[in-house]
Length: 281
Ligand code: DHB
Ligand code: FE
Image: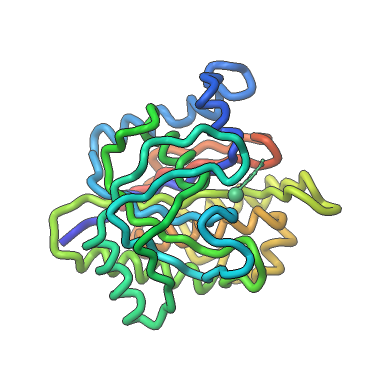
């Protein structure tokens, strides 16, 4: 059966894509952030995943406020990349894995998750920037992808508890897919940030640190909070941490080992973080 070999969670801030396009990785503002990915590159070189399940949120590119699914899963043979207004150069399209996508869709629907199935899907900075952080160069990409999109944009949002259960269901789906493929699960976005309103610029280092630690030892910790409580603690875009939670839940409840982590404030308006976890031997 297919096997999840690890989980990488990372911020997806548009400015990361702009910094990559302009070759700014060595500049003082960016160096620490980009250098944090060196152990991730070494790990990817050694484990060589075949597929990435990418848990992310669309920011008005593929879905807009008029029609917005809570959960959507891509089942396309290819995903074109596009810029929804940040002026970031696009990257090479991503090859899909329709057979695994349909297996995941069938599995999670059988577990009572209502997902929108997308045989055409454009992906934005929330997929492209993390993929570039993991595999620099802008493609061609060494993995096929299964995009899992979750609404973090327009209320009502799915609760952390429900996202956690969806992640567990995705983990079970991968583990019952008949192939020997190695799968990395990627969760993008976060950590605490708020882009507009009275609390624009809001960051909560203490909560972010507690959340990151919980992903190692107590992965369902964040599910005790309602969506409103999470927005209060992390900002109206910090709620993107439910994408990290979903990805982490796919690893299951067995012990995990932290291979790498960074936490850096600020990148643009965010507390930027990255974690790489793998199942403990
Ligand atoms: C920023 C962060 C995001 O998560 C996003 O989707 C857009 C912008 C920012 O900090 O600039
Ligand atoms: Fe975002």
